[in-house]
Length: 134
Image (cartoon, rainbow, N blue to C red; front, side, top):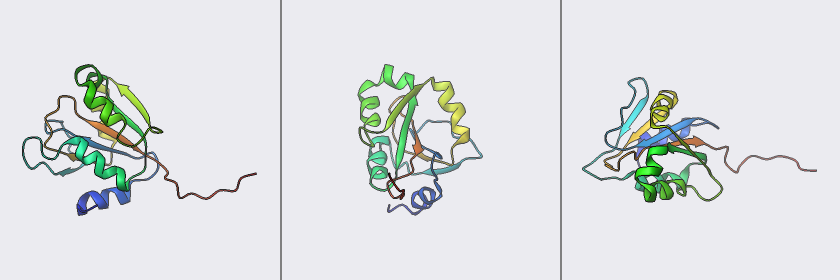
């Protein structure tokens, strides 16, 4: 990950920790680490950031607002598939997503203006764990 702040934030993510990639207008809580990478309207997009995160971050669930599915279904489908087919997807009310944003470790704000274009990532355990099998 070329962005040092995002790289450091990923290093602090443990299994089940939360991170968000949000649009330009998302109300970020003051107590949550905010990494603002917005450059201009639409740049970078949430989907661009998710594509880069997929290369370096293990995610076991993607959480988005039900409003996203209703009002921007193509964005919802693309974000839902951003980490592969084996990753769970949960749709919750937008108010609940904003409430849960107070529990995340880091928010990455983009220049995206996709309405309800906010994605919460539940960190996975990754595939490096060793265990004995019978």
